[in-house]
Length: 212
Image (tube, rainbow, N blue to C red; front, side):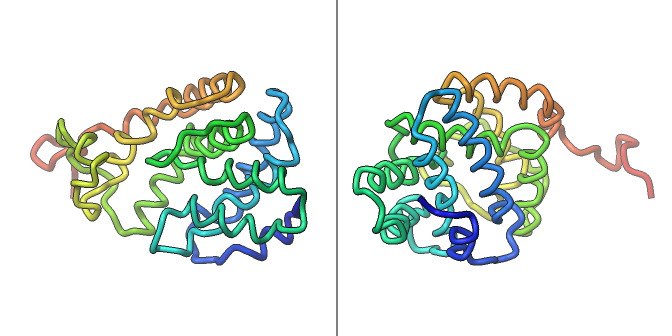
């Protein structure tokens, strides 16, 4: 439905190492792997994966919904039922908010996108994202933070890499929507289990942990 080079042309390079085109390619490869194992339409899943983040440059609205609209325009020469399937998958790929993935193709994309945030690559990405936004690597997470975060009642400037681990990374295994995704998530979680140390409090100067 769309070639890699054509898909790449629709992305704007903002120097973001977390949501760059390498991320898109990793998600595409993983989505195709899941689609084949689950018996989904690989062509639809591939197109959706290649276009799922094309609206990251739009700060005015939900990037998944905006990307779905752009994908419909880009793929307008394709069969209508294929376009609808791609649009649905893209619109439902977000972890936070929005509709849950309903079709098998949407579930394949959802799982592939979340798998890129699990394990070693996921830990690297959360640290990189904190760096891009100039946020702290660690911060105290209040007991009610997750609930307040879900309702948009937190200060995004205080959202450290540790906060992201608490509200997202540690829950990703539970959110997998396909059997293949769940199996892969377990493998990646084990490989990147050191991520649990994101919750460790940094040593204070007075406890001998820091030396000048």
